Length: 67
Image (cartoon, rainbow, N blue to C red; front, top):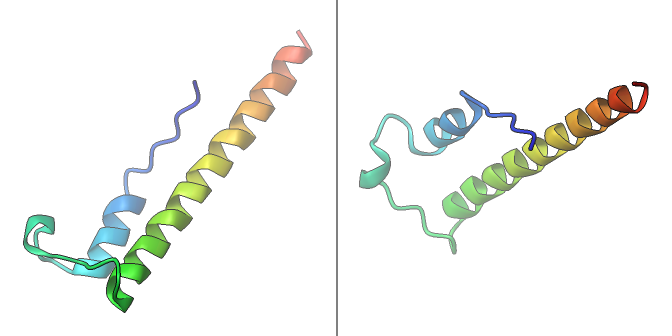
């Protein structure tokens, strides 16, 4: 298993979309522009993380193949 956690990206996306409000106090509707913008940013972050994990796994496999 390869895990690359982001200690800042998720909170940065959240802060960008809801500011300083507590997440429980904010409702972003998936059917309006603000909600869609948030969901698009979250999907980008998911794709970025998946790509990062894939690249790390491939690099590790390459190193292990040399052993």
